Image 1 (cartoon, rainbow, N blue to C red):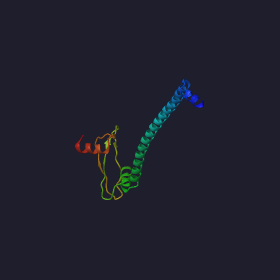
Image 2: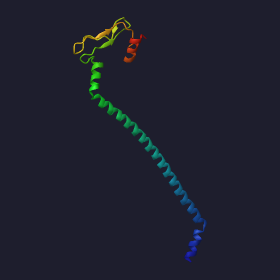
Image 3: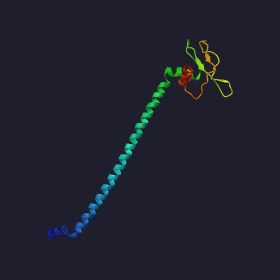
Image 4: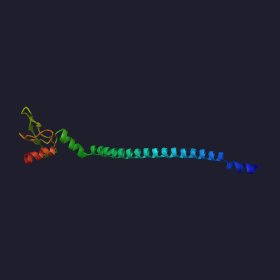
Length: 142
């Protein structure tokens, strides 16, 4: 008798409704987990891109730090900021007239080795140009 009751329960519409409810619950849970996993994967990709970007920036900064420790950096800074030159080098400074007619860009004195500094007065060059452009304009007259 028990077996026939069990068989009749599995074949009844109540069991079918229970199966549909359980299947719906499982399907909704799986869909939610799939959506969460997709969002987590997108976040992981974004973080990996940021990491690669920051690693590249970090490498550039390390390269710059190594360059600032080099002898060539100190020479370049001494030339540009302090106006120094190596023994035997002659320094040419391009000067121009400002709006009041005064010469701008002139440096007084000589380098540590006692070399005189050559000046090229009267060359009209705007101060916004880079050094390469100043030389181009000086030699080719633009």
